[in-house]
Image (cartoon, rainbow, N blue to C red; front, side, top):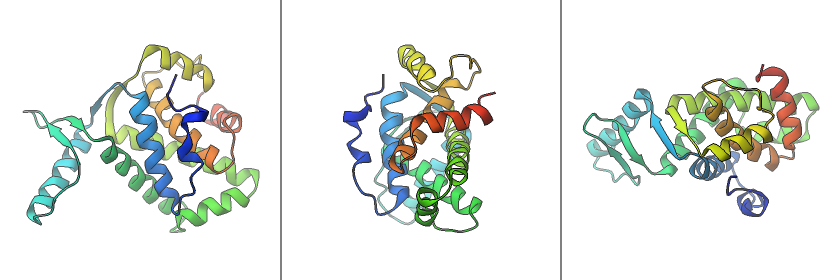
Length: 198
């Protein structure tokens, strides 16, 4: 089981000035506790090299731990870099989908809105998180016991596709985001079960 159960979710009791800050915190905490091994995509490797080169050209210190092997692939990376990538991508995609409405305003409208707005938030957020993780990782692994527990938790017992671990990682992040805005896990799972899990 993830180390992030109820008593370990103190970060959800904090008030965040920007919702994107919560996306960063949740992403880093959930992925760090769930993923045991990950292989990054060529796109993400290239993006990180580009950021490092730009930082070097500007003589700026980059406050991130990233190590590459002789093939130029990331072998070790600070989870904060991954969290920042997810935060930025989530914020950008939500702005794009909601036609340049700020993320905080979107969240206020979801919290105060109808069931449909909550349902849309769940589906859009899941799609963004899943796509973002696929931009980051070629593959991810987790403990087999954790995978079984989370397949049960998210009604994925009959889901046997290769991307199951990626789906679970996306749902771990989404569950915390939903909980923060008052949408419970059962509503989240039901919305996704009907539209995505098929």
